[in-house]
Figure 1 (spheres, rainbow, N blue to C red):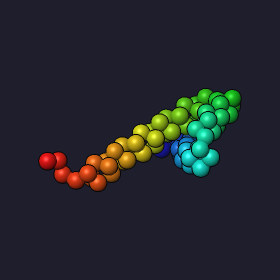
Figure 2 (cartoon, rainbow, N blue to C red; figure 1 turned 90 degrees about the vertical axis):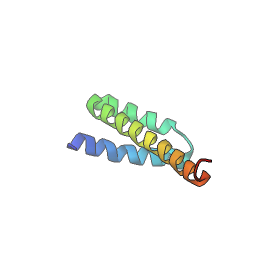
Figure 3 (cartoon, rainbow, N blue to C red; figure 1 turned 135 degrees about the vertical axis):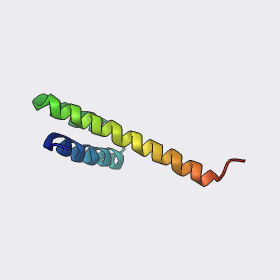
Figure 4 (cartoon, rainbow, N blue to C red; figure 1 turned 90 degrees about the horizontal axis):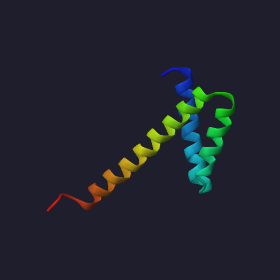
Length: 73
Protein backbone atom coordinates (compact mmCIF):
# COMPACT_ATOMS: atom_id res chain seq x y z
CA UNK A 1 0.00 0.00 0.00
CA UNK A 2 0.98 3.62 -0.36
CA UNK A 3 1.54 6.04 2.46
CA UNK A 4 -2.03 7.37 2.33
CA UNK A 5 -3.54 3.91 2.61
CA UNK A 6 -1.08 2.84 5.30
CA UNK A 7 -1.77 5.88 7.45
CA UNK A 8 -5.52 5.70 6.87
CA UNK A 9 -5.59 2.01 7.79
CA UNK A 10 -3.63 2.60 11.00
CA UNK A 11 -5.99 5.42 11.90
CA UNK A 12 -8.99 3.24 11.08
CA UNK A 13 -7.74 0.53 13.45
CA UNK A 14 -7.25 3.10 16.20
CA UNK A 15 -10.63 4.76 15.60
CA UNK A 16 -12.46 1.42 15.66
CA UNK A 17 -10.69 0.49 18.91
CA UNK A 18 -11.55 3.88 20.43
CA UNK A 19 -15.19 3.55 19.35
CA UNK A 20 -15.39 0.10 20.94
CA UNK A 21 -13.68 1.27 24.13
CA UNK A 22 -15.89 4.34 24.45
CA UNK A 23 -19.05 2.62 23.24
CA UNK A 24 -19.49 5.44 20.74
CA UNK A 25 -19.37 4.79 16.99
CA UNK A 26 -19.60 8.54 16.46
CA UNK A 27 -15.85 8.69 17.07
CA UNK A 28 -15.32 7.20 13.62
CA UNK A 29 -17.47 9.90 12.02
CA UNK A 30 -15.65 12.64 13.92
CA UNK A 31 -12.27 11.37 12.74
CA UNK A 32 -13.60 11.12 9.20
CA UNK A 33 -14.85 14.71 9.30
CA UNK A 34 -11.51 15.94 10.63
CA UNK A 35 -9.71 14.16 7.80
CA UNK A 36 -12.15 15.48 5.19
CA UNK A 37 -11.47 19.04 6.28
CA UNK A 38 -7.88 18.75 5.08
CA UNK A 39 -7.66 15.72 2.78
CA UNK A 40 -10.60 14.08 1.07
CA UNK A 41 -8.24 11.48 -0.37
CA UNK A 42 -7.17 10.41 3.11
CA UNK A 43 -10.78 10.54 4.30
CA UNK A 44 -11.85 8.16 1.52
CA UNK A 45 -9.00 5.78 2.31
CA UNK A 46 -9.91 5.91 6.01
CA UNK A 47 -13.58 5.17 5.38
CA UNK A 48 -12.68 2.30 3.07
CA UNK A 49 -10.37 0.84 5.71
CA UNK A 50 -13.08 1.20 8.38
CA UNK A 51 -15.67 -0.54 6.19
CA UNK A 52 -13.29 -3.37 5.31
CA UNK A 53 -12.19 -3.91 8.90
CA UNK A 54 -15.75 -3.84 10.30
CA UNK A 55 -16.95 -6.22 7.58
CA UNK A 56 -14.09 -8.58 8.41
CA UNK A 57 -15.00 -8.47 12.12
CA UNK A 58 -18.64 -9.32 11.36
CA UNK A 59 -17.62 -12.17 9.07
CA UNK A 60 -15.23 -13.59 11.68
CA UNK A 61 -17.94 -13.48 14.35
CA UNK A 62 -20.29 -15.33 12.00
CA UNK A 63 -17.64 -17.95 11.26
CA UNK A 64 -16.84 -18.40 14.95
CA UNK A 65 -20.54 -18.83 15.75
CA UNK A 66 -20.96 -21.41 13.01
CA UNK A 67 -17.94 -23.34 14.31
CA UNK A 68 -19.36 -23.28 17.86
CA UNK A 69 -22.60 -24.76 16.57
CA UNK A 70 -20.74 -27.70 15.09
CA UNK A 71 -21.44 -29.66 11.93
CA UNK A 72 -24.81 -29.35 10.24
CA UNK A 73 -27.15 -32.24 10.91
